[in-house]
Length: 507
Image (cartoon, rainbow, N blue to C red; front, side, top):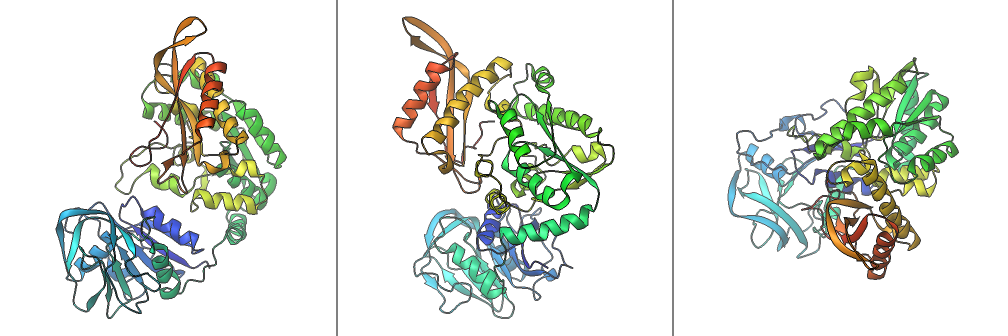
């Protein structure tokens, strides 16, 4: 049984980062809601409690029954998690005079503390909290301080409990990964045995047991997630897997043909369906981004369902859902962030059981699994692409003419990134068709045509991203190519917004 660290999610935007850091240490972990601790799972070797937008003394604050694991397993509280522990055991948590957000330095570190082993003197940490612990419970002690926060970290004298008011998972915490390693490996006894190879071995075994000789249908999108899921399932159940690839007419230029060819080379059993006419008709006149997503999601379900019903003995629906899909589609507070057709609709409509072999992996882990499975590199390194396709990169209503303009501009941009050796240094790139026209001059004629924006970002996990600092020579080349070759475009802009505060996609 794979040993694991459980991360209790109290709604922090950086909870996933905790998981990412542990996975980078080859430690398997799972993120679960604050009230869903798996009490009867003997493979759990430690618990991390995340941050939260709440204050522990709020009436509606997320609270956990700490008796489920304290005294039984090592526990690390981060920010709100640390405050929750201190508050529950009789300490004081109060609103800080000013919100502490940003870099700080540890001015005191307890010598020979297991959690803080190899943390450098004056180590930089990242603070992000409006409350602070002003008094520790009895039998707890301070193990680290900053000039402004006396209780920056603490430890229980009786139980295996540690708490930090900073965020070790954040990039700006210089020794944050070391702290997480100290907890997961030295304190919890983790063996750091998590790897792509071990994931494939255990998952293929589980899939064989779960699916037996049942028929499985998988919706392919052309992206790395669903492609890796397909190859993994094919390894487990072979021809009992049938894949369906729906072309909604909003893919990149020639993408449907190229991807179908790739799938055939991988030996997958794939049915391709061209449904672009249906989608264009249903999107006619629609400008609201969320409405576009819902129409495309429902349309995908209808087309997929019609095709899947031809496979009368299918019992399972497989999807390429990954961890960020599950967490971003519905926040812990129940607030819909964006609709996502990977996580709802199909199983209920088709009365099939759901199989999501990648649902606990982050994007870069999916790529590692793909390489371990021997998939071609161009499939593995494909940039993420939104499920609704170019519909959310056309601001305003959708028409075949607009899609064609965007496909041509996007093809020039993406091809250029590849030709200049820049593609693999970019997390995600694309072109956005803006709902504005601008004056230009071509030849001796005045023009009044479309403007497009180029978007390229660097990232490790899409939870945060920086705009890519592309060479000026490249930008000039691409701008000239688009304006000269794409009829209807006379202006090219470049988006230099980072995430946060912006998002990667415009809609």
